[in-house]
Length: 225
Image 1 (cartoon, one colour):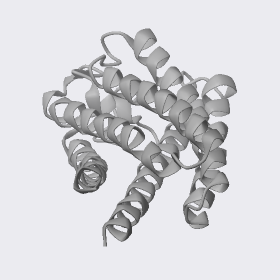
Image 2: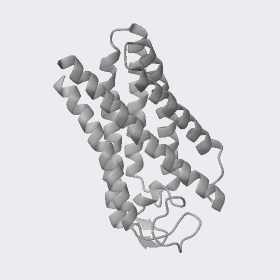
Image 3: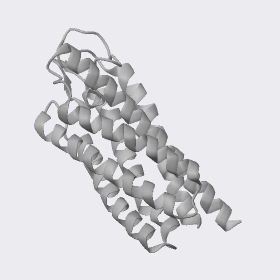
């Protein structure tokens, strides 16, 4: 019980640090966007999260932001992986739910690995490979969430957390469609749409996983009392 509680504590800390470190990284970001190199500072609607990890931000050294972004995304990925490794414990009483949760955790951990790899492949060094891992992370993530959503409705788990995953799954599917079929980032309008969409899904992901980790932590505490 204590081990599970510590794992969910780590998930909460890792996700929280991601938010904090990326905000600080934005303050140190020098300049430039995908379509305009002369802009000053970081723009919420014109820059992508990945640009924080660029070693060279459109002609400007970006070592401080990169030094913050890489551990931030690594922590978020480790937190996500830890969550999916610990979460199946709540679904062992029902055979179908156990299978769903195990499958969901496998996909979730693979998604977490993709996020960690993304941190160490700066987009300014290998954009194609960077984007490929982004696509796979967001292909695997919604599948994991869907499997867990079904599992949560099958067992005696608080329904409010299942509905959190329903809403989150809808956002993940919408974002995956945006990535696969949305406007190209080489155009100004496409850049803005993709950048804003990315911010929405990243913060929705952090909020959803933190909510689930907090809920799981409460379940562990209740079971141990």
